[in-house]
Length: 216
Image (tube, rainbow, N blue to C red; front, top):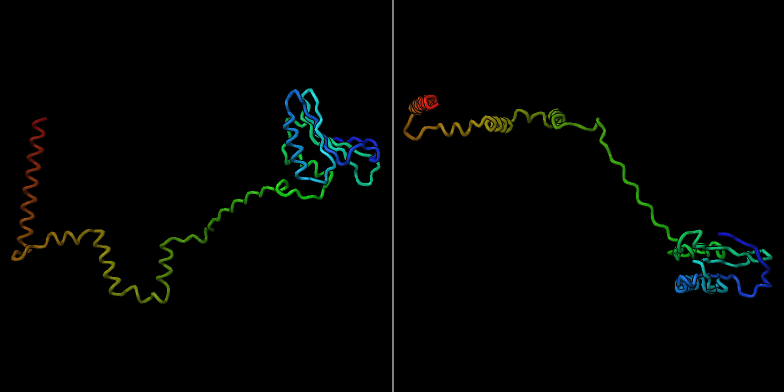
């Protein structure tokens, strides 16, 4: 924003501070200029002496402020926005901030000055220390060494549980049930029948292999 000193406040023909909005009539920017004037008056009200619309040509859109700085004998003119210099048209909140910084630097503009909260930092990933990592076998070993569990290793229930696990792995329980002889039949007769069945199965397989080789 450029500042230019001018004549004294006593010689000023208009109330201060004064905002002037020059707009190009050929570009039909009068409604845009009127909108900015309305926004500035709504926000600053009687803090402004005057808001003027000045028709111009050549694609002009310039917002200037003429005011009397505190303790100064002459007025100063500040360019708040120039479309050709700043590029395009200003945002309303940006124009208000620039005007506030000159005439009322300590004023809070509320939502215009509201800062967006910074995103919360992502929590650091917690890593487990190697010394804290224990396998299940190590935990079980420590539990077995505990005095309260010293008398539980040789308990009958523990032996039965171990036998059940071993039988489940070998699947011997089902095999024993399948080989149990029917009522009235001895174990020797059952074994003899099993041997005969295995012999017949072997001979049948041999015959099948012989037939396949002949066909080939």
